[in-house]
Length: 422
Image (cartoon, rainbow, N blue to C red; front, side, top):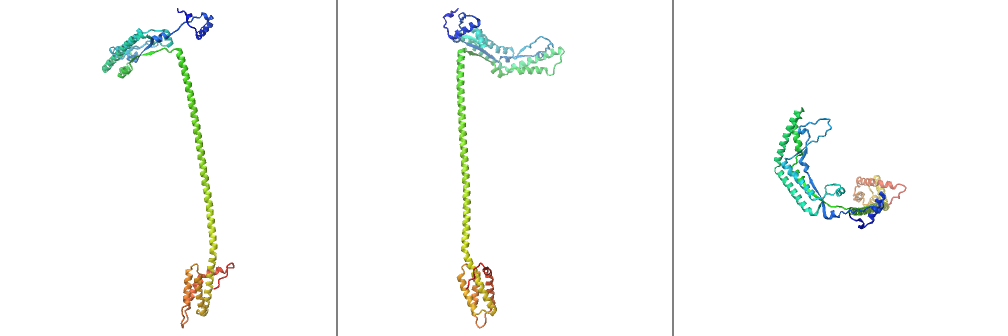
């Protein structure tokens, strides 16, 4: 036995010995230190597990009715249905033997440790020393090559194998139907077809045989508790760093959102300020336009008033001129009607009226000027021995009186100026 007194003691082992001594009621010196070192397994070999998958495709469990057997009802005995190989044995067994050969090679060159099986919680991994690993790998490669050869053999003749399986199953279904009928049972309709469909549904196809039948091995090493603690510590450290990075990222995202929100608020405030400024400018323009319009109207009214003030004396003079012409024409017409002709004084007055009107006609009254010119022509026509015909002169004087009657009537109002005298 190894003398543990020569082994160096550490505080952890001493603490464990003290806890054990306290629980069992002994002295700490009485607790034996048992050395446990897995470095030999770690350094001198490797744990290997043979992984054979997909070989369950080659078998199928049949029910009793498919075999033509009717079990007694109400029995406490358990009858387990048999299994049936889905391929002929000359093809199925070559596919199954490589897996058994690989497991046999693993058991031949490996060691089994119950302690590691307990720690690993599985008996699948066995320890192979490095000196035997090459031999194990050679036998394993041979088994895998045999599996590939067996699969190629089945795949090359798969159609013939399938026909052989169908023929065998149909024969089994016919025998089962006869057995059921012999025991007094009614054969269900389509019984043989149902048995055949059940077997064909489980029959592996070429792709299943090629891809699902695999043979390999896995290699594992011991993960020590200290390494697990170190890994956990690193994992916690990485998780802490990750949490800090995520927190920093969230903080940065919030800051970014706050900056974007602030920029958006500033943009909205600037937009509102510009809108209010434009609105104020528009209102100012409207007020300015209204003021300008009022000023324009006032100027127009003032101009109208000034024009009215400037035109009133002219209009007044024109009306007075018309009134004077009306009075002269009325006097001449009265004299003409009284004497039956236009005597020399009236003719002279008519010529003076025409001359005076040409001087005072600043408004270019064409109609009145034409009448006065015609009156002047009639008044200056030589009479000869006979008297002038008063008809044309009387008609012209009537037209002049009618044309100037309105202005003469207005001047007769009290607020008007007296008529101008010729």
